[in-house]
Structures are given as structure tokens and as C-alpha cells.
Image (cartoon, rainbow, N blue to C red):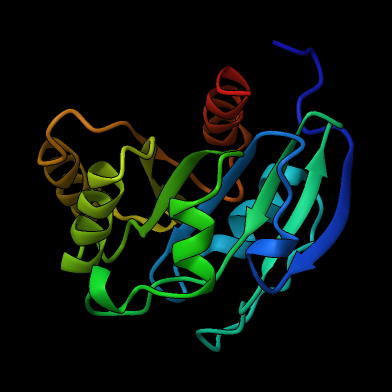
Length: 188
């Protein structure tokens, strides 16, 4: 494990389709429902406020945006999968190609707002990833915003994940981010 993780970060490109995907290094991505805190989490991991654009408007990410980390791997910022449901038959185009036909993609982190907990779309997306043999983990975001009652419900929800890997994170707490960074580096 390197001593300084996520030390060097550089935006590389935005891809509009499979012909523009990068395959020369391992790729890791974060995906979830709209407004789950994806850009904020990526910015916190990279220790670069404003690197990925954050917005209260859902659906602004429309491309696969690659950034090179420590000259070893790419983090890809990708579009989310909506609010209510995930349907494999309607999952086409850019994201289907990115997830199903991407030999460089090593792991998908499914982001869940810890205040909203798992929704059917999250479970359906995890089932989809399992069906294609893609490694994944759940990442509960915004854990610093939970009150005592919310924390109890989060623990109950985590208990229902049937052995799936999960992380509790906060964009403001480095300790929670370190576990996620270690997991990425373990898969490089």
C-alpha cells in the first residue's frame, strides 16, 4: 500500500461512448441514484474541493469523466441510474457499454444516501452487477448527518445486505474515506 494515497490527481478526458473509454489502467467508478452525494464523495477522496461539479439538480452527469489517480488507476465519474427503479432492459447505451463491456473496470461502488437507505433501485442494480460478475460494494454517504435514530436504522439496513461489502462514509471524515481508499488500492 503506498504511503500517500490519492496524492496526484489529473483530469484526463470525458468519454461519450465505448470507443473513447480508457483501458490502459484499472478503472473504478461510483454510481447511485440521483443526488446521492457522488461528486462530493469523489472530491473528498481526491482532497480537491470542486474537482467534480456538484449540483442539486439531478442528472447533470451525462458522460464518463476520467481522472488519473497517483498515475496508477482511473476514477470514473458516471451518470446515475435515476430515482425509483433500475431496469436492466432499459439500461442501454453509454452505461451498459461502460459496465458490461469494459475490461478495465475493476469495481463499482454503489452509493446510497445513508439518510434514505436502500431503495429497490439499489437492490436491482446490485443484482444486475452480480448477474454479470462485476465486483461491487455499497457505500453509504453523508453518515455525518445521521442522528442516533438514523444510525440505528442504518445498522439494520446493513444487516440485510447478505454478506455484501459496504462502507460508511462522510465527505468530512478522513477515517471513513481511508477505508474506501484502501479498498480501491487493494484492487489496483
